[in-house]
Length: 338
Image 1 (cartoon, helix red, strand yellow):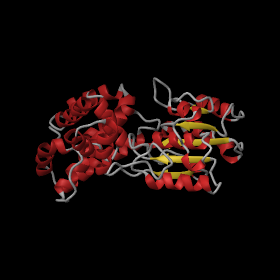
Image 2 (cartoon, one colour; image 1 turned 90 degrees about the vertical axis):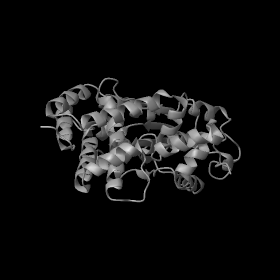
Image 3 (spheres, helix red, strand yellow; image 1 turned 135 degrees about the vertical axis):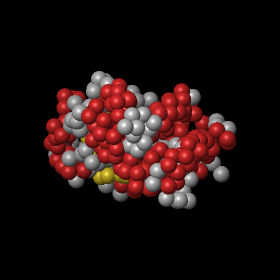
Image 4 (cartoon, rainbow, N blue to C red; image 1 turned 30 degrees about the vertical axis):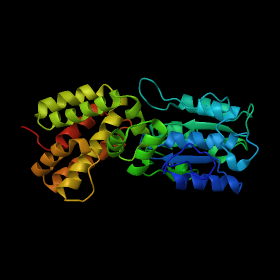
């Protein structure tokens, strides 16, 4: 049976029914918060949920139960990212950080009355990339929000966020989407054949957005294969070669986050195999290589590599020396040839 958005409300969101239900209940009861923090790994559907919520808030359909209708002018503009009352914050193109000047600019626009909608909404993708000073620039709005204003903050985790931000926001932690749901969405709504849908659902790690990107752009899978091959090569290199790679990768900080997130799933698979867990690996197309690596390592080594990768990921959004952080990480990885 095709998986449809929850109820008849036409929310273009899949696999996060509980989050949709939570937001719909708040709307029904007139208890919409002035700030929401949507947390989850990249590609899991955070921006999709935020945009669907914005569509629902400003939909002009006469029947509230049918919002978002997806057909009115407001819904179409928001879906296309061009509604005048929905403002998106942009990270710096060179550093990837969310600068304080950008936050202040968005806040000044948010303070204006809506041009045509019920709500003026500011969406902050990658909010974990905001430094503390930039996050502080939100506090006045969070403490004294205009009645027409709404903040939707999107982050991969709350570790880099100030307590003053998290305490003043309603947090929604998005969980990985079931592989069966991803498979059904790919087949029913994206035209994938069953075999292709099976593969992508298994590789997605519960990230529907990633699966859709991989389906629509074959280069996505090629980049993933190259990134995993890079890890395989790294584990066979000596200290000097590892430091050379650290220097090369540090020059492209924006590409590090998805790279290390992928490596994190790989190490998780190794840990699962080394402990004999019944959970199938996320990187199922690399099962043979994963089994070989798990056989070479003990459980402690695999777990240490996984934790080291997680720690480095958490530090990427801080003002750290990226090259030094990668050098430390690569020394923590097993297989070092002296």
